[in-house]
Amino acid sequence: MDRKIVLLGAGSRYFETVLAELALTPELAGCRVVLYDVDAKGMKLMQQAGRRILEKTGARLKLSSTSDLARALDGADFAISSIGVHGPDYAWHRLDSEACAPFGIMHTTGDTVGPSGLSQALRIIPIYMGIAREMQKRCPGVILLNHSNPMAPICRAIIKYTGINVVGYCHNVPIDIEWYGQLLGVDPTELEVEVAGPNHMTWLVSVRHRGRDVYGELKRRILRMKPQRGRMFAAEVLRVLDVLPIGDDRHIIEFFPHARLARWPDDIPYQMQWRPRLLDDLLRARGEGDPFVLRAQGEAEPLIAQRPSPESMGRQIRAMALGVEHLQYVNTPNLCSVPNLPSWAVLELRCLIGSYGARPLPVGELPAQAARWSLAHIYAHELF
Image (tube, rainbow, N blue to C red; front, side):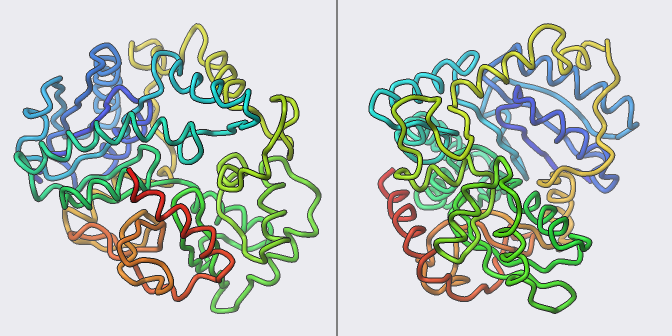
């Protein structure tokens, strides 16, 4: 197959997984994979890691790199993006959260909403718009598979102002489906799940097991379970609104700012961690002897996952290149899938993935109490 796949922000550690998934997809043999980044050092390490992955798997992908955006995009069929604007060692992102703390605004993630989310959006959306404008000139038929946050505002801006076909990927829904299966004592692959809402504020609309509605039973089990770190606030939202939000507490609570008011970082409720402290943990975990660097430099075995990631980039590109459709939870324009939310709103929905990109399946109306919270953020996205 002769297709050109561009990895935007290729120094991102996420692309180690992407390269392995592309390599393990035999239908992509012969594809050109081009790494692009403004960070030459990070891109070089990723190219080294990618070459070792190709050697290990025997994949027939053609791997190259460039710091010239026009050259990277010229004639591209697909682009996968994971662009970071956190600054060296997360310095800018840390400042976003630290600047808010004296006012009692304690960010637990800070990449989607609130002052820190706004700051990140103002840094990253102009970068994406520059890329999308270049795509209009160099590869207008490209499909962009975005992984950067804030997900919905980035995708909405690209679609609204350039018309480039963009599909947004997040792992929250697949991870939660695994959790539902555990709680219900069933194989999660047997669950039929409908969701809807802006990314990181997505709602569980329905869940069925072999055709039987099990949402009520799932609610009962969540409300009866012992407090579980990372799930405590989600259970509280379910208790109050009778609709279950998708994802980890650290994302969900940021859409309910009154619920995380605190004078000091130690006072954040629901056993949640202030974002700068989480960043400290991430940097300590990386420390000396960085596993990724060791793999890239040949001092450790290449990372070849035994199962695809929730985003499963090899499968996505295969579906889009060959028209082999499959279902995936992605971020895409609503297109009246949820009638009581705007048709243009970028929502996380169950979609068919194929040669056209993403096509949402009908969901029906979102419960009013969930639609109310969602609409406030959907219209906020229009301000960027």
